[in-house]
Length: 179
Image (cartoon, rainbow, N blue to C red; front, top):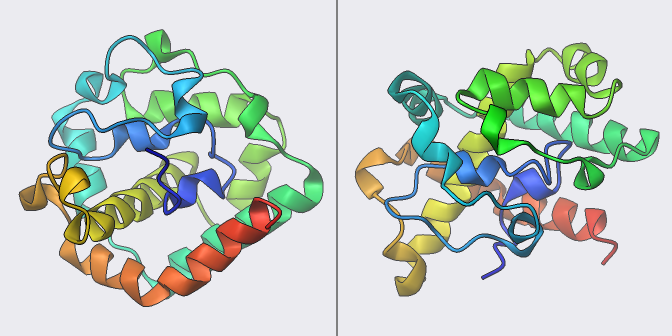
């Protein structure tokens, strides 16, 4: 099932499978872009509990969201296409490992993230927070998806933030996909 709400597809981390690190209850069906390079095992199972807690506790706000959008827009202007990057899940055991693969995939990503006030880890956390919120929001109206979401692990403030910005997120994603 294709999750059109995964903001990570819009952003510089698009194809590096940050949704695999989201907080699903079960292994959710992978979006099409992730199926191509999906690992045999769920990489989220390998990350430390502290990293999972950091994702759950990360709070979205307008400042963070606006900076994510700026990174995305600038990445598009610079022709950064991480969709072509390969993710080696055997080397990912933490969020820091994934952040390193993201920044290592293109030498322009690290400076771009930093120029917008993020560390690579915080940028990843922000994207994962949006991803989790999007999945949780969709699960409210999708019984099939609801079975994959453990609502006790969802940051409801982020869901509310996502829902308040859903139209803008969808417009940005449509623009990014050339629609």
